[in-house]
Length: 176
Image (tube, rainbow, N blue to C red; front, side, top):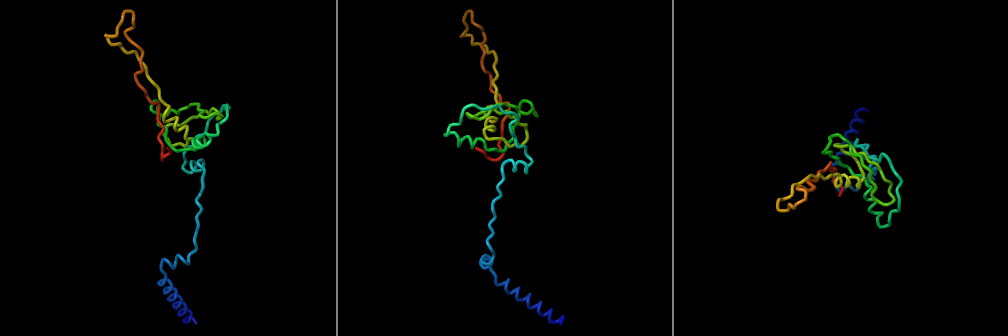
């Protein structure tokens, strides 16, 4: 009885091996069922939590005035998408930047506090503000050339001497 079982098992294995040898990629694709994998949809907040990166939301809010024109709604939605980047503070290392910002009519005036030198998720318009607007100008007295001196005039005049950036927001990945 044991011998019959062993012979039967050997025959089954040989038959299975013949079947496997006769298969090619096309035959396997015909037999195998199609598996549809649905892409996993995650919000930016969930993505930030998974990456262990702060998702920055406003600290305070003041009521907005006006209404958003219809022609700006698409741009408004685009500018409120969250993007990932790093704010690099050039003036005082480690000091978070705090500012009020309201870009569109009807939007509330929001107080933002951005931690420096670490990845964060912020709305696109906040990132653009940090990239372009965080600068200041220095002024100083400059001596007038001697050929422009006149009696009773000051020998110096007040003029801008430079533009300095308080910091910059660097994108991680593209968000243009």
